[in-house]
Length: 357
Image (tube, rainbow, N blue to C red; front, side):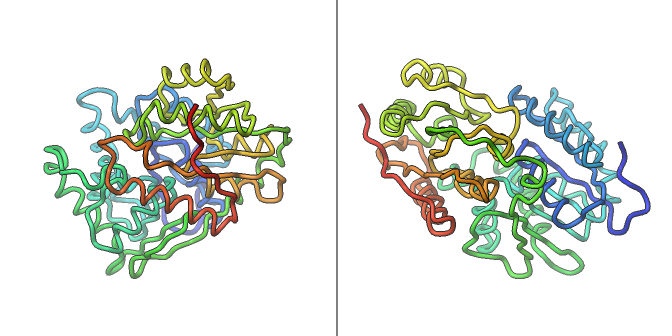
């Protein structure tokens, strides 16, 4: 299905690498370019869970009248060259580029090619908060859980690309930059337009959900990213199950299968591998009356997606003792900031870190 012809405005290319990014581009299109078809370029990852969710989200995008261009961007040694070469022409012709992950090396490389006069950054979870802050402070773009470490050889080689991308993401001349976000932002770069992301498309298309008694628990990939110790995480989940009677565990798409099996055996939780982003799963239901989460994107997004329902989202602090020795020095402060802003903005109840067995 092609974008609808003859409609006003610049042709838009949207680059996404995760299901949540694709969802948030759909939300942006619903809010700001209703009725206008976009071209989604899916830079497909290799992880089967993520690929499956992306294909389901791509179906929803097609139903909305958008075109999907699926790129096997990581399908072998020659894939990056083929992908970038095939996208060079469309990138130069696009009047607007929408992207979900400004930290992505792939996206940064593509940004050096585009001549678009409008660049839109949609939410990629809590990383959006860090991106906007780094842009405002003129810092190099580094994911929060890696900040504080020394740049590796690959970082040094790609530093010119990252610097060029940061310049493209800075408003100037004929270039406008917009951030579409549901996250709280402390610093806003001069000239950057910030627009509110309220999950209006999600609420229009899905729900309201059937609400069940008891609690559901949202999983996190903090163990997989090397921030939180695996044993400490399992102990914390066990304590939450014991204290709040949680029954289901919605796994993050990056969570390790062995860790999930251990959680099921040691806690008795039903492990759920969602086929769509959690905001859509929760809105469709059924969902527990209480949703427990560690500091993550969902403590900001679920209250918006579930506006008008009786579901209560509760956030659990991360105990500093759970952090690994290799965790970034920035980790504890960043995670606490996610918790505190969610509590202040959405009035979420906060739990202290649960004690282990």
